[in-house]
Amino acid sequence: MRIVVTGGAGFIGSALVRHLVLERGAQVLTIDALTYAGNRASLEAVKTCANHRFLQADIRNSAAMHEAITTFAPDRIMHLAAESHVDRSITGADNFISTNVVGTFTLLEVARNYWNGLAARAKTDFRFLHVSTDEVYGSLGADGLFTEQTPYDPSSPYSASKAASDHLAKAWYRTYGLPVVVSNCSNNYGPYHFPEKLIPLSILNAMERKPLPVYGKGDNIRDWLHVDDHARALDLIAGKGRPGETYNVGGGNERRNIDVVLQICKLLDQFVPGPTSRAELIEFVTDRPGHDARYAIDATKLETELGWRAQETFETGIAKTVRWYLDNEWWWRPLRDRYDGERLGLSVAGGAGKAA
Ligand code: NAD
Image (cartoon, rainbow, N blue to C red; front, side, top):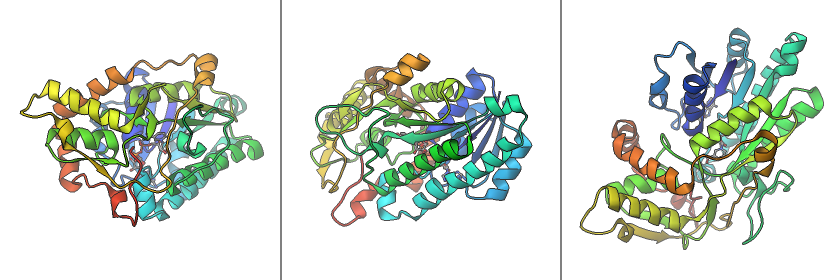
């Protein structure tokens, strides 16, 4: 199996590359532009693997994508490259539109061109997996779950750009027959997560006994999934998912943001006891108007059709994650020195960013 992974130096992409290279023995070409969120250190585990190659290139560069894809000749393209941080999309949406929308369009066109030239069997077996988010569905009230039939209703520039790219991916299937599958996943957490998002930021700030900013009253609810469970789901969806279909991915781990931060404090207090509880570092900061209240995923289709099950509960996954940050300062220290943990959404008039 020959697989191109775009965005493979990012948080989820690098988990997927490690899974494909180390556990599945696939031949993998990682394509990544190495923006602020991309990090070669996240691919340290596959650095010496003969079945992994890395190419620094931008998905918006059609000629570079064409060259890379026709030369490597993949059986699958798994597309994760994106601008992914809601707060940054509020302060400047340009890159979100150009990478997430135009970049996805560019990649779809290159893939279509490549796929058209394949022999009949390879053409049938080829898959383009477009990796997306549950945020395209908007916000839930107290009840209900996002299903694959939930209408799109994105709130932020980030989720709107992902919704646009989902529609392009589906259109390339319906119009051109390109075997596209779309996955929409809930919030991920785990190792190698850039420390601007709620969980890694809270872990590192709590470790260093810095303030722990929580938006509003901390009662926004997210459905948390360990990144390795997501990687396994993506592998399954790309391998067995039906072209033209969407698969929702979620672990059924709904938590209020405040409870997530309290859990991190509790774990750190256990692992590295100190004079006072880290929970005292929590600071509630101004919420963003329009901040989505609740996300929760119904993953029944993925579970019944493809047999996927999350292996981590939130309790097991978050304990491993906190432990990983304690043990892997080599990875996060250089990032922390460049980015000190300010929550970017706070710099926008009236608002704060999404806690993920
Ligand atoms: P990330 O920000 O950690 O990584 C994105 C990667 O894409 C980085 O390595 C970056 O260098 C690369 N990239 C950005 N622009 C590029 C470009 N123009 N050309 C080539 N590479 C480029 O993001 P992530 O959290 O790993 O998310 C990966 C994908 O999964 C995204 O598509 C995101 O929308 C989706 N997703 C994320 C979550 C989550 O909780 N993080 C949940 C559901 C879906």
